[in-house]
Length: 187
Ligand SMILES: C[S@@+](CC[C@H](N)C(=O)[O-])C[C@H]1O[C@@H](n2cnc3c(N)ncnc32)[C@H](O)[C@@H]1O
Image (cartoon, rainbow, N blue to C red):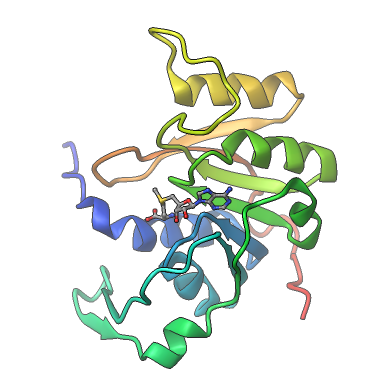
């Protein structure tokens, strides 16, 4: 039986679950992480995730725990204390992390793939559109598939998956099988 897709607004909770199912706690960056809910949820599970985004939006004040169905309130102080670099993503930043995440991040997907190739880092991308990417837009080209091809041509072992929310829910990533090795998060 096909499971009903969840609302797009639950993408942070669903991606957190996917990430924690696939990776040990990581030193990570959420590129284009906006309000930082993904980083907040990951950090509450032992990750060290920093938002990299040139814009600082209003902080969030609540989210729904999709396992309990309960609303969770978050103080302004807590939301404001999510680690953040108020900068455009630059490839050299990849050196500071083990995993780069891009959830509907704008104009940085190819840059993230290039940076991860150059510095030997992992990535998890859910690309939404080609806006600001250094790619020639042609008819009938599937942006997601072209990114997968792009990474594979660089020699990266790219896998794909899907998360159960409405909208652009496809993931391309460099896999790390959980429990194969323990990755220590640097303090
Ligand atoms: C569509 S929003 C997605 C935000 C969030 N990840 C989400 O799923 O709601 C795209 C985000 O990319 C950020 N962004 C745009 N250019 C960027 C860049 N060069 N480096 C990092 N973030 C960027 C924007 O500020 C914005 O927060």
